[in-house]
Image (tube, rainbow, N blue to C red; front, side, top):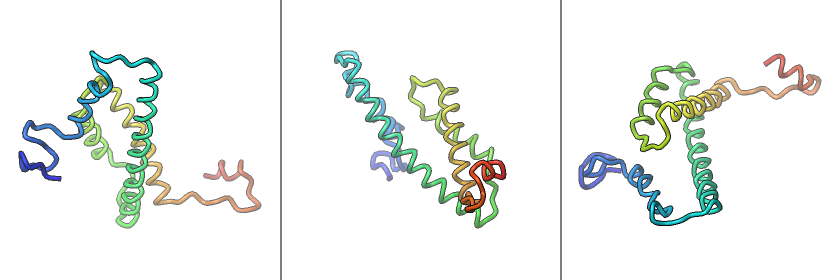
Length: 142
C-alpha cells in the first residue's frame, strides 16, 4: 500500500509506519493515564491481543510453509543465518517498547526456530509409523 502523503509504500508523511501509529495509540484506547482499567479489563485486553497474535503467527506459519516448498524445489538450505539476522534487525527497528530489544530477539529466535521446523516438515515430511512399529520405535528412529 503506497501512502498518498509520501509516495513511499507503507510510510506516512511523518516517516511512521501506520501499524506503529496504531500501536502507539493503544495507550489512549486503553484508558492511558486518564482512564482506569481494573485487572479484569486488562486481562480481557490481553486475551484479545493473544487472539490477534495467534492469527498473525498462523499467517506467518503459512508463509513459512510456502517458503519451505520453494526451498525444497530449489535446494536452498533451511537454515539461513543472514536472513535471521535481518529479521532480528527489522523487528528491533520497529519496536516501540516497552519490550526491550534483547527480549524481542529472544521471542523471535523461538518463533524462527518453530518456523524452521515447519519448513523441515515441508521438505522432509514426518512419516506415519507403520502398523507394526511402536510409538517408541518411531521416536527413536526419527
